[in-house]
Length: 389
Figure (cartoon, one colour):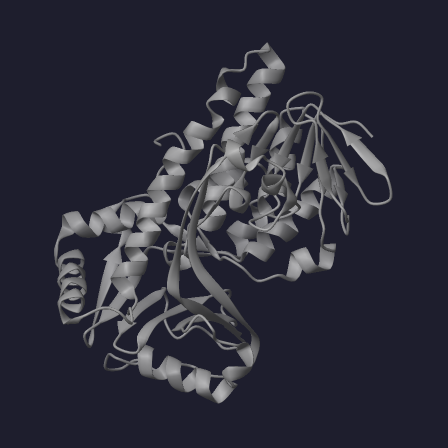
């Protein structure tokens, strides 16, 4: 086969890139290792920035998002026995977040691509990229070959595209955190109208939601935690202890549908381009989920890449492609800092002394009492407009 853009990875980054390119008259083929069912059911991120919602809506894949997504105009910070609301409607008027699961975004994009007769190949194995400095092509499966003008690596942190770049052509920046998150999906109605970020002496906890009937929770746990170490009764007991720290709050409990342990790391590779291979999303950068930036960064990446490719195909000029990495990395590093900051602000660290704990409390007091500090948090949380960074 031949196409204009070969896309490795059928997650939200690869699917959205394919859809955006098609809207600009550019052909692409998506190659995905997993099955369609796996991609549509894998529970991952669920907080969409205002800019992400705007991109999906403008691309014609926002109908169900508008109907079923849960707009939020603030978040709640709990610590020291008190609760404090960061009010987006006051601090960043006209901008908010929408809770809508990543798997739902993937479903919408797959449906849109297939309805438009887009080419998505699921359960593709042995994918390899070749001749990145010349006439790039992708081989996969039993000797199949896809020739293309450029390749987009949207295949995640463990994918083959970044691993295909010579080590001396990349600089990587990484920080691993001394804890993990235990993620829980439960068939219970949310216990609050907005997300709750809780810092307690026993560790961090997050109350989120996926729908009016399904809630999402996270607990800070040791890095060597196994899912089987946490039976349902222990999970609910720990969530109650970490979230029920203010009068009048009742945690709804019920059947747990899924459990997973997520390591906490920060990772960036520079540049996000090698020859005619362009990295996007988790293939180029990972952020701790505390700041809810992973999916949103992927959307920003492919939006920038779409504009650059469309300009190149229309004019033959390479300026936007040449600046793709630098353009994306400005936003990536802003999100890295915000995610690192939120992580340090809200988690307990085994090596932290009393001085460090007092600093954490002092800064939380500042964020919850200063409009300027709260605005900084709110502005970063809802996300900068795509053209601002």
